[in-house]
Image 1 (tube, rainbow, N blue to C red):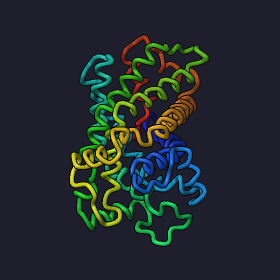
Image 2: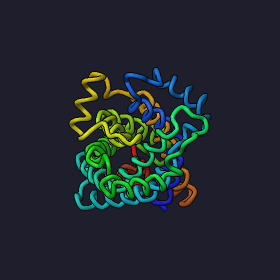
Image 3: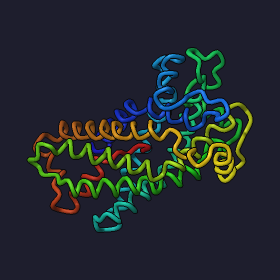
Length: 309
C-alpha cells in the first residue's frame, strides 16, 4: 500500500510540476545568441501562445512511464539501507537517500533524456510540421537504433552527480524538518507540517545540485538537430561559461523553485490521503508518531517524494 500511495502521489506531483519543468528545460538550453525567451514568465506566455497549453505538457509520458520503477527503487533502496545502517540519524538519512538516488539513475537518466528531447521538439510551433519523435518510447527507440546504449544513457554521469547528493540532501532536510516541527497524532496541523517539510526539502535539494542539472539538460538536448555541440562534460561547462558567464548555472532556477514546492505538496497530500483512506483515520496518523526511531523511519519511507526532485 505504501508503494501504491507513493506511485499515486508521484503521479500527482508530475501533473502539477511538468509545465514548470518544460519552462526550465527551454530556458536552460536556449541559444544565448538568439534567445527565444526573456525569462520564466515570458517563456510560459510564449509556449501557451505559440503551442497552446499542451505545449507545457510535452514529454510528460516519459516521467509517467518511469514513475513506477523509480518509486520501487527509491523506496526499496532507502528502506533497506536504513535497516542496514541500524540507527535513524540525520547522517544515515543522507547516506540512505544518496544510495537511493544513485541507483535510481538507471531509470531516471533515459527517462529524462526522452523527456528533454520531447520538450524541445516543435519549439515555437502550435502544431509541429515535422515531428522527429511520436512519443517518449519512440524517442528512446530511435536514439537506441542510432546511437546504441551509449546514446540512451547520454548524461548518465551528470545525472549521477546530481541525484546522489540531491536525494541525500532531500532526505536529510526532510528528517531535520519533521523532527523540528514535530508530528503528534492529535495535531490538527500534522498534514500541513508534512507538506511544508517536503516542499522545503525539495527546494533545498534543487538548490544544492542545480548547476549540475543545467549541464545535464544541455548534454541531453545536444545533437537534436544532428550536430553535437559538446564533446564532454568539461567541454560543455567550458563553452557555457565562456559564452554566458557563471550566471548560466542559474538558468531556469526560478521555474524550478516555483515547481519544487507545489510538486512536493501535491505528492505529500496524495500519499497521506491514500494511506489514511486505506488504513483508516486511526491507524494512518500513528505512522507519524515520532517517539520510536523505527516509526520515524517508516514516516520517511511513506511520505518522501520518490520521483525526480
